[in-house]
Each structure stands twice: as C-alpha cells, then as structure tokens.
Amino acid sequence: MQIVWTRGRTTVRDVHEELLLVGYTPYTTVMAAMNNLAQKGVLKQDKKDRAYSYKPAVSSAQMANDIVDNVIDKILGGSASPIISHLLKLNGEDEVVEILELRKKLQS
Image 1 (spheres, rainbow, N blue to C red):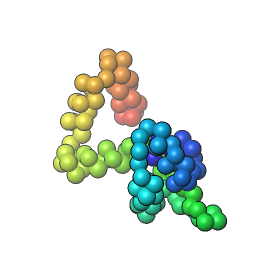
Image 2: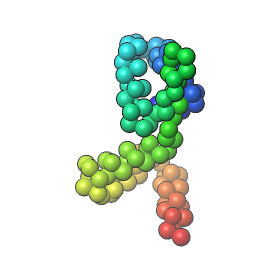
Image 3: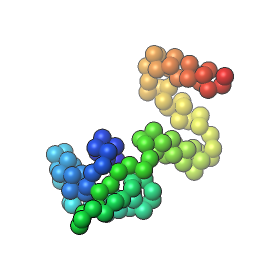
Image 4: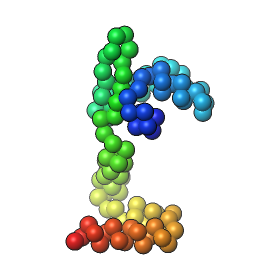
C-alpha cells in the first residue's frame, strides 16, 4: 500500500518492479494482492487498454484507524488501554506530551 499511496495511481507492473528492488515477489502474488485489495474497497481499479490501473480508495490514516479499531474490538475486547500503554512505552517523553495535548484537544 505504501507504494500505491506514494504513486497515487499505478499498475501491478509498477508495484512489482518497485518490490523487486527490496527482494523477490512473484508478479502473480502482487497481482492477486492488488485484486484482493480492490475487491475489499481499499484500492480503486480502472481498466485502461489491456491493463488495470489502481489508486488508493482510502488514505493511510484511515486504514491505520480501521486496523486499530479492529484490533481493539476483536482482539482486545473493546479496551484500548493495552495499545495506549504499549505506545507510551515505545515513544519518548516528547511524544507522550504530544499525545496528552492531543487528548486535551479532542476532549474540548
């Protein structure tokens, strides 16, 4: 998804070529993954000539929110405390202050 978000509109071939720079991934695997993401509504698929082009249907922020919401609901039984605790341990003092300031803004 990072490649698609960066490019905006792309093809399976473009994504495959970029993935080859970091390691081998079969073309058919990339194609199947992108088709699955299009079926799930994460990518928009447009046919142009003989090839499909893809563009993001959701932003990276929206996808992150959806994933975190699913983890909280389905794995943590609705409690966000374990995730918040983990994030506070991972981040430095400055980010903890920033998180607390964001919380204040959301509450007002």
